Amino acid sequence: MVQEHENIVGLDAAILMSPKVWEASGHLEAFSDPLVECKKCHHRFRADHVEGTVCPDCGGELTEAKQFNLMVETYLGVVEGEKLKTYLRGEITQGVHVNFKQVVDSTRVKIPFGIAQVGKAFRNEITPSGFTFRSREFEQMELQFYITPSEEEGNKWIEYWKAKRKRWYMDLGMHEDHLRFREHAPDERAHYARAAYDVEFRVPGEGDGWKEMEGIHNRGDWDVGRHAKFSGKDLTYFDEEKKERFIPWVIETSGGVDRATLFFLMDAYVEEEIPSKSKIEGEENNEKETRIVLKLHPKLAPYKAAVFPLLANKPDLVEKAQIIRGELAKQWMIAFDARGNIGKRYRAQDEIGTPFCITVDFDSLKDDMVTVRDRDTMEQERIKISELKNYLAERLK
Ligand code: GAP
Image (cartoon, rainbow, N blue to C red; front, side):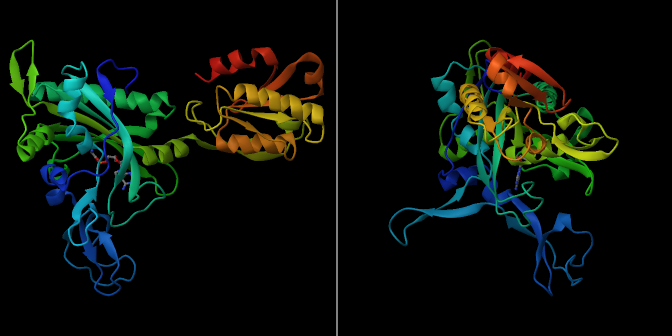
């Protein structure tokens, strides 16, 4: 999103800012979820997550919904009683918008241009749930893309970024039929949004259904306009070509890093029936077994390859395998494993998605070649040790 786009710069903004920022952004007033409470067991729920008026836990009667603000409060300052109440950022977005002028003045960007950021956000969620799907501390990855204010430009760029973001997930291996867009109805949109689409992921198995992974919003001139008003500073942009001054509109793409990671794991998780042991140890028989394999895109695999000595108790093999690991580790994350038998080691690496396993055997000591096994096909090839770097570089692209 940054390196491959001439007109996008990266930024790491503050987590703690003046509370005025959150007043200006509308978060203190409008960043809330509807909360209901059971009159009997006092459990609390998001009103839009319960069906009907009875408690899902005990069947008791639920209260009327009231708005519950999601901002996490904190206090700054050293004098007791005079501490300033402020907030941990509820979205990473505002740190970008308060730096809009700074970025325009200090870099050579011209509209249309974007500022991208990755960082932690905090929300006092009523019901954290679904592993890392909804938590109170999570990581966001965003682009705030500044454009000339008009409906036409807004529609053009929202379509452009929708297509780019879908491609981004697919280029990292996500299956196209597990992705779709869902447009928000006007009464569903966040307070800043003129138009909003979710990129949704189809969660497999139990709880089958489409879930939000990323939001793509037309924020109009809401953010920069409000920060100009609340700070009393001129935050207009001067378009040199058109000789026009205006508050830009913003198209944002706002993804959850933890949520996307969870979905990448689900998308890559495969259980497959394979002939028992035949591929891994060379024996043929008719029995079947289940292989669990995480078919992660190589860019997302935590380890790009694993190196094994065939036997752990042969110092020559161990030493050669460690030399190979050390050499490859200068470039990539490389695992080393000497425990158990080769079959077990393959399975362990399959489960964490390591694309290649490299085995040093007795022949390697004579011919300087190793066996490279591919995670997905389980095919094995003999490769010269001196060729390993090129071999991996080509296949990890
Ligand atoms: N700046 C716009 C914004 O924050 P959002 O739809 O509230 O929009 C964007 O959040 C993305 O952040 C969501 O699509 C989701 O992936 C992620 N996200 C939001 N709340 C989250 C939570 N409590 N836990 C994990 N991820 C969350």
